[in-house]
Image 1 (tube, rainbow, N blue to C red):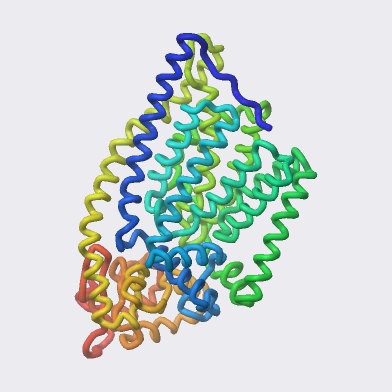
Image 2: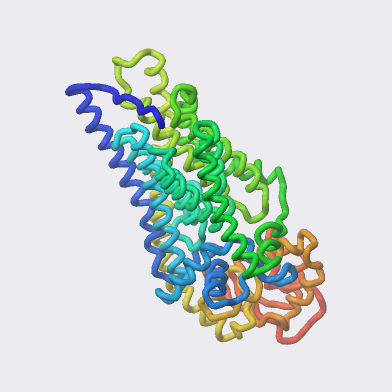
Length: 503
């Protein structure tokens, strides 16, 4: 059990401080709600939010229709995720008529569950309501800065986090309870079988139980082991070796330099929470909640450093870091606020730790407001352009279409013909021979190609050989807010760069 921090202040001064804290929390909550307006506004519209939405929708349909959920390694499409989310979103998609929109709703609700779990965990550890609200709101604001496009997007990661954080909240008040251990273990397994990137929190719980109550650890591990064995047996029985190849040995280029670049890119968004988190980490010896959060944070940072070196992994590798930092920041707020003249000099000096995060927030909020307003304004243009793009794909043979933005192909009723990113990884790592590019992009295999940018881009999902084949056999036929659309040349000519592709 954690040791609650005593509330500061008393009497009239304490009540006044409490009122101001609620005012500050309300302001942060209002900013957080504003940050969620644009993602929520996208929910009902067939407008692509990122490359993953259509990819997840195709696999959701395959799951509930009895299709091939895990194709062989040589295929032009790949599935490297566990299957649980595909069945959930697939069945909801059958009910709503569109798994993309259903997946967005699941992702938004899951994100809000994580926010609620942060609030509840802080309250369980003695953080007063106003500061727990501020901590949860700060997490939303941080995610808006870190990865706005991940909120309310058809991607299973927030569902996985929601399972894991809910398990923590259920277990924390009474860690010896067999029922709570069972719930926490099963939710951790569900999270891992939704997306296996979400492992730091279950690992932190296991290590924590090993240090505080080994008997509880054996129960937790037993429940987790039983459900994991059942899931693994069902997956191998249903999908065979292709499941193991797809999930456990998917080809992926890795670079330590990429990890460093990604860490540098996400640090500005995480910096305010990290400033506050350091206050909590100073007290890990005397506060069990601080010790747990420090353990969780370290495991999350190690996981992020390892995962972010892989191609295709972005800010989502740092979501566990953000959750852990938000929990630590909430504990720090209880330690620091309200800054009182009656506090001891060391604590008064700690109050200056609030000044830098506050300054960053004051400077950043106007930029965030402007960015979100611009996103809302661009939504109207996307809503207008996307139906025309879908019709363009249909007119030019969507059955043989290739889309980098897979949502467009999915909404045009095209089959899942190609997965640009995963095929690119297979080609770049040698799992598929490079001469496949000349076959796929010979002007006859695909009747229309959609890409975000022209294939002259060096840093693209496909290797240079594929881009050159497209340049040789395709011309730009349409440009819209959703990218460029290429059609085969009517007559073959000598291999030279078309003017349509020159920079």
